[in-house]
Length: 207
Image (cartoon, rainbow, N blue to C red):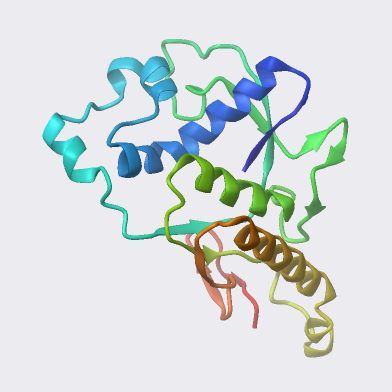
C-alpha cells in the first residue's frame, strides 16, 4: 500500500495515488476495466502498449480471483519529472517512495533487511481500496509474513515473539477487512518452509 508522506499536501496525495496505479492498477485495471489506468496512459504515452477492442473484451472481467502478496506500506512524495532520455517504470510515476517520515519508520523494521518495514494497518487499507475500486474481487492472500535469517539456535528460534506479534497484527487487520466487507477467502503465511529466494537462495524461512 502507499500513503502520502505529507497528508496535507495535495502533491503527495496525488503521488500516492499514482504509485498505486503504476504498481497495482497496472495489473488490476485491465482485468477489471479492460484498459490500463488513465494516469499511466497519460504519463507513459506511446511506450505503453494499447489494447485492441478485442483484447480489451478478452481481459475485462477475466479475473477468477485475486492473489495478493502483502508485506509493506510505503510513503510517497511527489518527485520531479524524469529525464525524457531515460524513461523507466521506476521514474515514470514521478514518485519518491520510502519508509520514513522525519526519521521515524512507518512501522516495525525487519531484522533481515532495512528495506522492509512492516505496517499491518496497510493490509486493511489495501484490501479496502481494492474492494472500493475494483468491484471487490474474490481474494486470497497468497503471501504475508516476516523473513528472518535461519542461523538461530533451536531455543532462540522457538522464542519467535516478534514474528508471532507480526502475524497476529496482520491477521487482526485481515479480520477487520473481512468485517468491512472485503471478499477474502483464504490466507497463506509466508513461508511455512525453507524458502528459496531468487537473489538470496535458502537463507530465510520459517522453519
